[in-house]
Length: 198
Image (cartoon, rainbow, N blue to C red):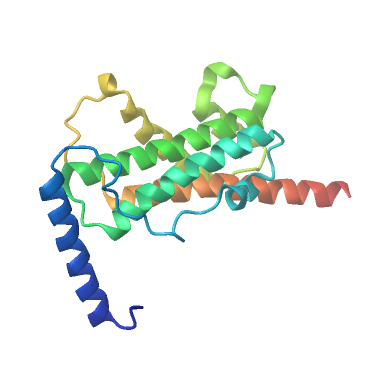
């Protein structure tokens, strides 16, 4: 029966939560192929739709692989938005989302900049190059630099503090927005360039 108001929504959520807990209590840590709930359809985006975001890239395989990774970000987003996962588990989910957006950004920067920048300067050097060529504005560059610096916590041997009560939903959203600004800025720049050369 479709949900038509918030009272019904809360009733269904309570029932789902109770039922899932009952399943977990029964199964424990055992893995059974006949004991899986149906993941909701309509939340995870289609790879074909996501590929359209990468029109500024030429390599079709790369576009596909980038879109597949964004599907994983949908799974992260669903867990963060539709479950009450909290504490360290939530923080590590947020961290992995940030790492995913940083990985996407690193790939896009490396491929888009090509040989126009020194490999030794890495991601920060490529960001600076795109600022100097008017592809990125300083705000987008600052956010991408934050994203990359935050992503470096992926290397646990470099982390000097406990990763506890560090990552927040606002960090996940900031990382996603920084990543999106990169693709949007490149797309807008390429559109301006094509119009100027037409």
